[in-house]
Length: 212
Figure 1: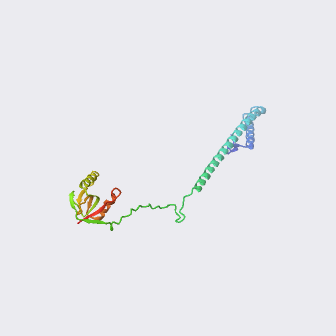
Figure 2: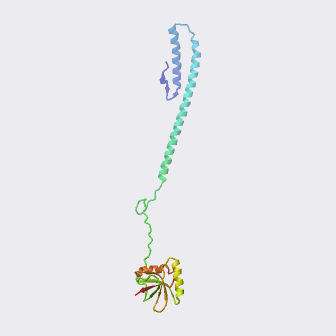
Figure 3: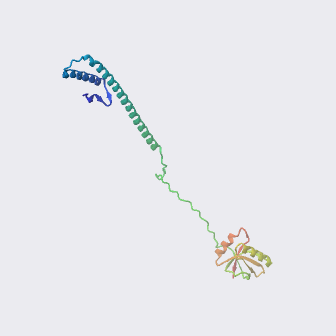
């Protein structure tokens, strides 16, 4: 039998091939002596040459396969190393913005709150009159006057217009015989002033009436 140690790492060396030829030659000699048959040793020569040729071809093929597998393994290792280097470069180039003052990347932003200025109604002017109800359900302490007419019909026309807009308009008569058209009436001055401000763009001369 052939010694398996002649094949190392998939490659057949030249010395291993010579060892094979020597073993074949010895094997042929053993057959001649054991069988005690007269065999022309020259018959072994073609056999040795044929086997030598086959083994040489097989060894060459194994060498090529080993070389190709070695190249592929080297190429695979190179690709893995290149991919790893790219990943490390990508990680190293990623920069997280840091607040230079606090040293942290989390920046807290406080939302801006819009503050509506509060109007001061403490100095709102109020006119005091002892009026008489002409058309309405009654007045409270403070009322918003949006029109004053010497003719009642004109006051009635404005009252109807305001009612059409959803207001509970009323008509009162002042001691000077003026017909006042009341837009709204309130228990306190602040509420009356706020109601007046809402319609000040339409009725610029609106004012507050205090009922005695």
